[in-house]
Image (cartoon, rainbow, N blue to C red; front, side, top):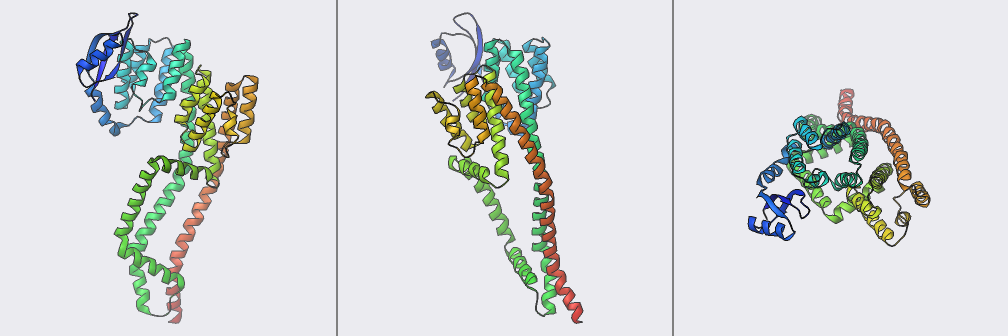
Length: 401
């Protein structure tokens, strides 16, 4: 269904801008009129649809949003008019997709729309957490403070994500390189060496015979192997996108040895930090939990948060559902219970977030220290087995001569 961009005058003489879906311009105009609006402008929104179709060429990254949030916070605190601040950010940002989005936001705000409503028109870029925090600042008249707080929280989230991602770059690169080199060696290099050993005759060590067997299999079916690996990767991606597959994969992450504790602490930090930020912005507890459920990033935790919402609606504590889960640390339950009893939930959530953030930092640091020697040992064993399988029969041949 086509989308139309509109600008209307409300019953209380305010100018409002936004988008409306309708089969044709007449139906769009009638829909707006039925809502009590006086239509001032109505035009197709096709240009932005074309932009969305090409958005994969210049995706808006988390770092872009962090920089934009901090810049907007600084400009608003410096008393720069909101529309001018949005236009300046649009001009300065190097990402063309974000530049166009910020120009759209500036245009809608200039036409009378609220900043939160303008951001809400771009859900792929600005999530519900971001939009609701902005809306809470507008409602309470503390937009400047909310922008500063939001920028701080986004920088913390980005820093945490960057640390975790950076910790796994080295082992992932080494293991991938080892797999590729090993595949090429076994498929194309080893056969020429083992052919010499087979021609020489004599009994070969078991390691050499195993290497020859694996090499022969890879040499004959290497195309099939590549196809099967590719099919398995694509199939796994499709499976993970299904509700059952997503929950299965997220459950595995939480139950993994060593890494399960890391993922658990990450979700605790994400939950407590997001919920504390929303509550401090004036968002009611149930709405805040609904928003957190969408951004926590794990289906197991998402289901747990929805169970918590039902408990809260029935008048129970936040920790009621958490106490039944094996994935929520006891310390977190105890601290949140104290926060609810003392009326200092937001402060306690901040403390929970800080504590488990340090736990994540320590775990990541220890994992990096542990993973490097493990990868080197695995690499050494793989190379040692391969080399011994080739050199040992050559040594035996030379000794026999």
